[in-house]
Every structure is written in structure tokens, then in C-alpha cells.
Image 1 (cartoon, chains in turn yellow, purple):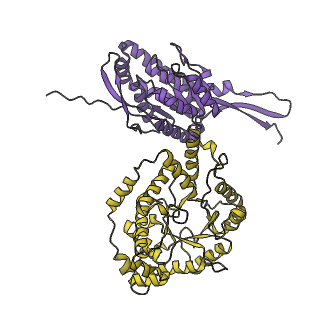
Image 2 (image 1 turned 30 degrees about the horizontal axis):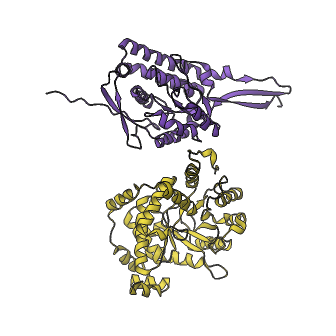
Image 3 (image 1 turned 90 degrees about the vertical axis):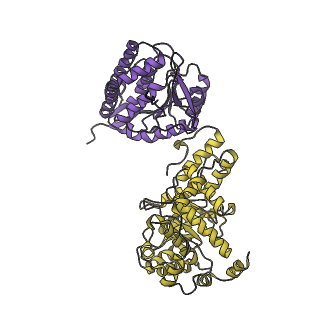
Length: 339
Length: 287
């Protein structure tokens, strides 16, 4: 660690933010700080992402990548039509992704709506990590997901419910309306408040993932500012999307977020996670993300604690690829579960 | 000043698009006299896999279309073939080295075969289906349904257009989708047929045409777990016994190779080879 990193590491989140912003987290101070960040060369970013997507990952590397992708997945069901039965079968798939091959690793977490958390916890049973990160986590979307259009009191109640029900991770959405109209202080304060409400009865905290909904932010510069804002406010993970708007995770957006995480690590020595979510459907796409992570922030980020895929249909494609690797012939959708 | 000839690039036909091979490979197509005609894409096993994915995603729509509609779509192919007959005749003359009259006769026969199979689309069900007598107050109906994705090794000898049509058309009638490996040495009319299909009413992905080596692609198609039936009509020169064994691993239906001028001749049995019979019981008059 450098001297400045050591100095930063000794501060708590709030103090660190104040030191960086140079004052209280007001709209004006945050605007001065966020607009002072250098802009993004969009063409360069997209070219870099496209270039990283051309790496050829074959044979033993591919095998490693496939198993790693599975262990990084937040297996997700976020439908209005979700039932306890559906959550139970999702958990079954999370624990045993490929019933025909028990050497297949488990996924990192299941991601559900807050009211489904008790069902997920019950279905996981002893496999539930329950705050230890040793088993499969339960992630809950909260704060009036996916739009975030509710009062702060309702958002916090949403978070409290999910944490009390046993959620290990809270996926919150930021108020994009406030962000886009420049009310950065409001977004900051909401993240801080949600983080405080992630506190469990025993004093430990559920992990907080902050969803930026990059598809609604418009520009890469906004994505970079929102990433800084979420990290300053104490988000442990920054997540691209809810999966509920047409434009979800893309490689350039994820790359720009990873660059913020890299810069934050250099500045403070702290490690923040990244979760691209929505639109990643094939093993080939997911492999491109692994390459991008390894090349931008380093391979040590390829652990469930620092990188996740938010996905539902991705797992089946990865399993078919895995079956192809072990059996030597192409597999088909008849050999994985229907979700 | 002499004009520079603009040669045509023959590409694959996958999912309604004309991509180059994923592998970037091409191979030379020569005329019957040995003159260079064109470069065709040499498809790899990954192209074959992509073709199966395209065929699978097109299956629901094609199998779900009404039999009457499928018949109309197949008939429309014949109409468009008729409109582009000059191009097909020229390609057949070049690549097969036959007379213009013989090439024209082959195109005629190919068009007639589309029409013949198109007619069966809303009729084969009445012929092959049945109302079974049972000892109880039930309707007991057996109806043929499409098998799913059919992989075809097109005839490698004989007329290049007619062979392809004879193998592809019967599989389409009942609502299957098709991945076909064209005649390796004479694939030009196959890709031109792809252009006809792309501009007709056939939905994207219903027919996928691969050019290249059948010996290279056939084992991957045979062992592919998402292929439901395998038509080896043109695989006589391959190690087709092993293809059959591979196909059996995932319960894929197999049609064995046929040789000679009557290979894949039009018949109802070629349609029914790619169907599966569903039998339904339904109560009679408990109203």
C-alpha cells in the first residue's frame, strides 16, 4: 500500500467520502467532484471492449472459465408470476445445476424479490450461507425495484423486510430521476440510508449491491459518475441493470465500471465488486466478461465476493457447453432443465 | 476497354442470413471441365452447431403454422424457382457439364417436386392419421406430428439441385426444420436455392444450408443431442454405420443412405419418416 492508500484505509466510508469530495455530500460538492472526473473516450472504450471480446479461450482454459462462470452466477427469477414453488425449483437448480454431473459447481447466489426470501432460505436449508458467505447466498432486490419510484420510508421498509427474512445481499436501485436531474446528494443519502438498514439484528451487515440501471443513464460519462457516487456512498458492489429495461448489461458499460473499481482500488486499497446483469445469455458472452475483468482489475476479482453475473438463461447455455466438453458431442436444451 | 467480371461469393445460408463460415475457410468450386467457378464457404462444425440452433428456434413457428399455410409457403418456393430458372439452368450446365436441355429438365423436375410435396402438406395427416376403434366411449385418435430438427446429408451424386430438393422438401412438409449439408463438389445451386428461400415466405431458420465437407460435419450433426432426425441419403460414401451408432446415443431417428438415380425419389414414406405419432384419448358425448 502507498502512504495515501494507508491513510485512506484508516478512514471509515463516510470520512473517506468527505475527504475525497472535500466537504459534506451536498449536491454542489458532489457535482463539482463527479463532473471533475475525466470524461470517457466512448469510441476508445467500445474498441477496447470489442478487442477484449476477440480473445480465444479454448480447451483447458475454457473448462476453467465454464466452471468459474457457474460459480459466479446469481441465479435470478424476478417475475410478477414468481411462486414459492418456482423459487424452490430455482434453488434446486442453484444447488445442483447439472443433475447428470455432480462435479458441477454451485452458483454463488439466488436472486429473488423480497417477499420470496423466506421461501428461498427455507429451500436452501443447510446450504444457505446465512451471512457467512460459505454456502449459497440469498440476494433480494429491494427499494421499489425496478423503478425505484417510492418514498424513502417505503424503500427502507422494503430493505428491512428482506434483511429480517434472511437475505445475505440487497440489490438496491438508485433513483435515476434524481441522478439525471443533478440531485446527487439525494442519491448519495439514499444509498447511505439503505446501507444502514442492511444491518442485521446481530450487528452484522447484508452486502449491498447498487444497481445503476445504465440503460437509463444515457452516456458512459454518467455511468462513470454513478459508479463513483455509488462507491463513495459505500456500495460494496455496483451492478449494471435491473434487466427490466431494453438496454441491459453491455461489455463497454461493464468495462467502464471496472475502470472505476480499478481506480478506487488504487486510490484507497479497497475492493469493490461488479455485477453485470441482464442480456448475458451465452457462455461465449460470459467468457468475454471474464477476460475483461482479468485484464482490467486482475484475476483476483474473479471470485464470488467481487464479481457476479446476474442471469437466468445463461446457466443453461453454460451447462450445455460443459456437457459438450465432457461428452465430446453437442448437447441440447432437452438435457438441461426448463425454467 | 474490357469489363472486369464480377464473380459471385457463395456463402452459407443460416437462420435466414448469408454468413461466411465461422472458420473463415473457403474451397474452390470447379466446373465439370476443371475450370474455376467460384469460392464457396467451407463450413465448420461450429457453423453446423449454429445451424442447429437456428433450426431449433424456428421450429415452433413452422411446426405451429397451419398445414394449409405450410402448403402455400412450399408452393411459393416453386413459383420463385420458376422465375429464376435461367440462373439455375446456367449453374447446373456449368457445374455438372450437362446440356442446357438436361439442366432445364432437372430444374423442371425440381419445381414439380416442390409442388408435389406442397400438395401433401394438408393431406398427409388424413392419410397417415387414424381414428382407432377402442372398446369404450372414447375417441382414440392417432396423428402424426413433426419430429423436430432434421439434419440431412444431401445426395452427393446425380442432379445437384434435384437431389437437394428431394431431400429437403419432404422433411419440411410436416413442419420439421432442416439443416442440410449440400453436394460438396456442386454446391452452387444449393446456395442459389437459399437465395430463393430467403426471398420467399419461408421463415428464417426453417432451412439452413451448409456447404463444405460432409465427412467433416456429419459426425457432429449425428452426435448432436439437439438433432431429432438424421437423413443420411447422400452419406453412402461416408462411414455411415458409425454415424448411425452416434445418432442412436441420443435417440435420433435415422434414414439410411440411398444410391442410384432413384435416390430420395418422391414418396409419402419420406414425409412420414420425419413424423412421430401422437395418440389421444378423448371422451365421447359426456355433455
